Image (tube, one colour):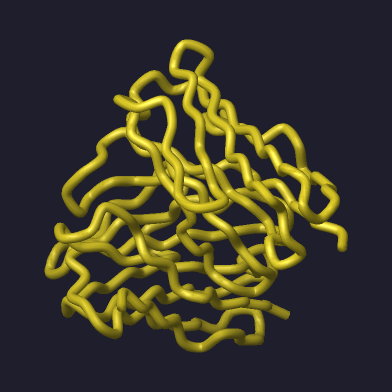
Length: 115
Length: 115
């Protein structure tokens, strides 16, 4: 039972254009969402997060949008750069705060930014 | 800051042997550490949550006696795969967090191959 779904296993984008990575979730208890970037044979690196009380969070080239009614979030990268090529994981938590929260991950989307 | 290391980065062992993987928080005290497993092209699956000085909490379907977790100090957690079999071959990733942080910091992962 996949509670966090990333239905696109891969995405290819031209340098300078916008990359949009999508994520859907099924658990209504999730109240905190994160995006991680991962290179092969390395651990995930935190990119950006959003709390369920917001619908948008921006950090430089990265913006995350949250649509709670649709249980959908997306990560926008603009402009995309070749160095952004990696696997992007969407993750969700049902108990934000403190030090004891579990993350549920999607399967990831491989983003390739072509020069 | 917030660096997490894992050792070894890769290990090959024979079926039936035990393998220990270390996870260390290098510049902060981690009250909670998580252990994940990732199969190729799959999501990171949480195996267990460990709090310093307490027994680990295992996710459903994860064998406690097979995957021994020890979190004896605020900077070190170990995962021991006992009597490893080829189906245990995977990428094992730990993460660490503390009440001061709103995120988990991931280690670089350990590639385990059981022959």
